Length: 106
Image (cartoon, rainbow, N blue to C red; front, side):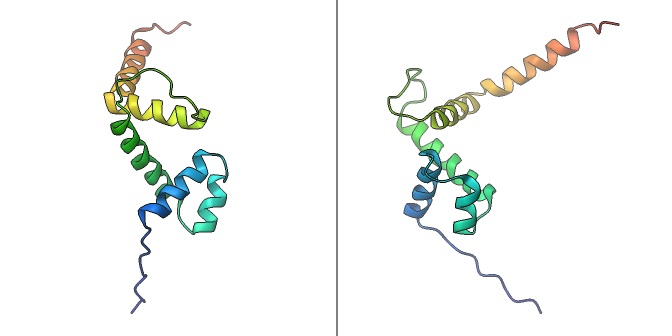
């Protein structure tokens, strides 16, 4: 019989610290994952959760830039807002339709 693998749990503070280390460019993703012995997928999930919380707290309808955000954080926030509003899916669908309608040149 195989030994049961214990599941580690992380406190909200540990998750916030990990996400902020990435967003403030104090750690590279690969280094942080290695240090914490976590997968990139788990770290990405924590970033998504943090983004969702910020979007809700900071009114996603606001289009003005927030002062002091790093370029990486601005891009993540913009991507999350767009994904939440369905704009990304709509843009992808529009591109597909345009490609289908464009006649192939010989």
